[in-house]
Image 1 (cartoon, rainbow, N blue to C red):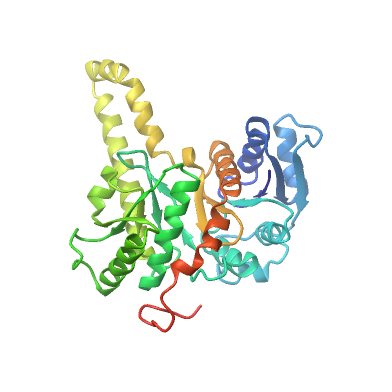
Image 2: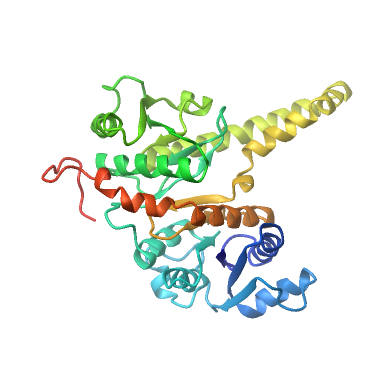
Length: 348
């Protein structure tokens, strides 16, 4: 398995990207291609005690970098020799099995869509992070790639999220819920009500395990394995979870540091606190897959350290080996509106 890594993308590039890639080669048994400025990558290798390029590690030189200030829609065109553009072209050409980047989300999504292309028949690619829940995590799809959706988009997100939960997370018959303000089919806007009927139809046909609408609270409790949403609502849901988790972690830390007795109490529940921190650590997961692209692409967090990059590479390898993309392509006919039904449809 060969994973292409954008060595220059992210806040801590290239040092953490290179270190994470080295750790992945050692611990996961994958091969890695580091794409970026060759001299900078070699310098990072030396800083990690690597004088000669180790087995399983390659360098693909790219002297430009897509910056956060660049226009995300056109950066990959304007910087054709950037690590992002070169890496995705390598993926497109079959010179690697998956691509990982901690760079600009918008630029990565635009470039992946226009260079690598979507799976034929998929209207929009979706960002599908695994969010922590009371029952082991759930796939949130979409979390921001497409703010304004049609019912058909949500239908496709439900299928893709279900396949991801099954193939990558190992969840047989994953429970799919539509994020909404209430459980009743009549709740929500026209988008949710129309999408509900499409998802219900897919469930009645035996294609997905749709359990109905799910409120944000129940989603966090773990009532579903897949949370289907438009990108606007999904992003608010995700950021609220992140903010609440950070707030709780800060409050717990302050509470346990209050006095000697509370510090002793912290020692008693040390393992529980460690587990709690692990649940909230995005670096444990690695990154967010762009589902719907015809080859595996993983977006790592912009602030990823070496540990997070290593896990993003692990995630990319699992994605590539899962058969998820093939499954989506084989079932695309069930993920479209009936011929002649234009309700909720949109041009590509």
